[in-house]
Amino acid sequence: MGLIISFCQLIFEKLFKKSESRNKFEIEDGITLFGNEQSPAARRVRIALHEKKIPYKQVEVDLLTGENHHPDFVKISPNRKIPAIAFKNVQGVQDCVMFESSVIIEYLDTVFPGSKLYPVDPWERAQVKMWMDWELGLVDDHVPLVYQNVLPFILRLTQPSKEAYLKAINPNMPKAKTDMFCRVYDGTHRSQEELEKHALACYQNLVVLEMALQDKEYLVGDRFTVADLTVLPRVQMFLTSGLPFTDKHFPNIVRYLKNLDGRPSFKASERTLVRVSNTVMTKAPWLLVGLSNFKSGTKHKRFDGSQFIDRALGETKASTESLIQTKLPYVHEDDITIYYYPTSTEVWQVKILLREKGVSYKSIDCPFIDLIGRAAGSGAVTRIQHGRRMVTGPRTVLEYLDKAFGSKKLLPDNPEERSQVQCWQAWEQAMYFNELAPLVEMCIVSKIMVLRYEKHLDELLSLRGNPAYHAKFNNILKCFMMGLREASPCWPQLLGDYGHLMDTEMHRRKKKEETYELLHIRLQHLEASLQDKVYLVGEDLSLADICVFSRLALFAHVGMKISADKYPSVATWMVKLQTRQSFSDCIEFLNKIFHI
Image 1 (tube, helix red, strand yellow):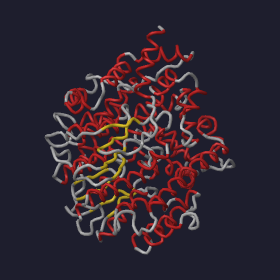
Image 2 (cartoon, helix red, strand yellow):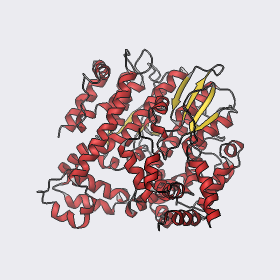
Image 3 (cartoon, one colour):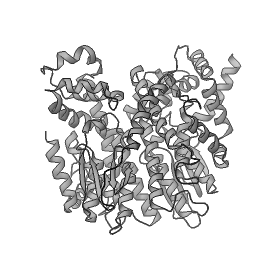
Image 4 (tube, helix red, strand yellow):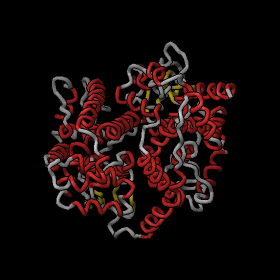
């Protein structure tokens, strides 16, 4: 047993522990990918590099000990995420760094020769982008299962104790992140109830993919595209994270994965050691659990999500088929209809873009509760209808509209400037998903919920039986209870069954303070980037300005003051943008609906 433990520990240390290097983040000549062998986002960039036959080297970034918070890495990737890529002295390519897998892949496909990964046809390109947003929508449900079912066992197998692990963590990692990884180590990152809802949501997304792959070899068109290299690494990872599936329930997905996994670029993108590790976690997870528990002297179990497959199939297939059979209302081919959610800043990004282009539009009001509890998973909720076409996903919608109404380009054609704009979009989305969205629910949406439902509690409680809201009902109710006064007549009706959902006031205050700290780090980066600049990218207004501004417009409503003394460049930039009617309208409207 001791030899087996030592062998497995060696494997996992090679995969997950950082290599000793004096300055591993120093950028050298050539193309350097900063990634991690287990990251699906980093793997899709490796697949693209192999598809295009581009030589590169990879620097492994140890996420478990917080190397992504090292100051030298933050200069490369201000989002503190992988992958990131650096180009230095590469023939025909400007020296630069960029982050976010979708940005990197699009840049590689634009500036390097070889078979094209993006379709030329605008509508096919939009479909590719929608699948990329679909994958992004999986993250907030899939990652908690990785943090519960994979990482705790690896940490307990490779680290002598939690105390030793804490000493190994990079001192630059924010305290909120350190506390989160401590919960991961202890196996308490998510409750059983939360894990069940995450598993159900993941399988519901798989049903959508299964139906889309009916009689198809690829997701978009008749050839391999970025949609395929984006979706496969994430779905493959389901098998290692306690979400198994077979061809009994998902025959199209199993066939699709098998066909793509045999592609040379997919094999080349994954080391043999990683395949062995993933096979162990897929075929014999009990071995990982047993060795980890033996080494740490604990008795932890893995969560089994497969029990939710049948339920996901039943609920999602019926609703999806109904949606497919429903014909879109007749509209003129040039009409734009926005699906409007009052608490969504993505909607304001779309509105500012259209107003800057002088394009008229119509709106359909949608329930704001659709966004509660699913910040990163709300990609498909952001949608517009253009004629008979339905376009979903925040970045997809913006790019589609920018192309469809070509006057006054807001996404530059120049590859370097384009990638800079897209990096800012990735930056603002990460800021919203990770930091701003919880504050919006706590400070704004909870108050709107009380105004809407305090005198109609039965209507709110009835949502539990609604398939559209059942999976996130507890998130909705928790949001409502955060805004409720203890003197409210609703309290006695809720405490018995739902009192456990509420955090203490002290815990909420601590969470706010930690989040404010992270947002100040964001503002420091933005301040440095705006020094002596009128716009974020280039000499003209771009989507970068629209997207970042719309998020910062929320700061005043969640208790975050952007001080002109502390952040003079940011304050000047915001004032300058508000001289444009489209931006001042945004501020005026947000002030109107959020001054509750």
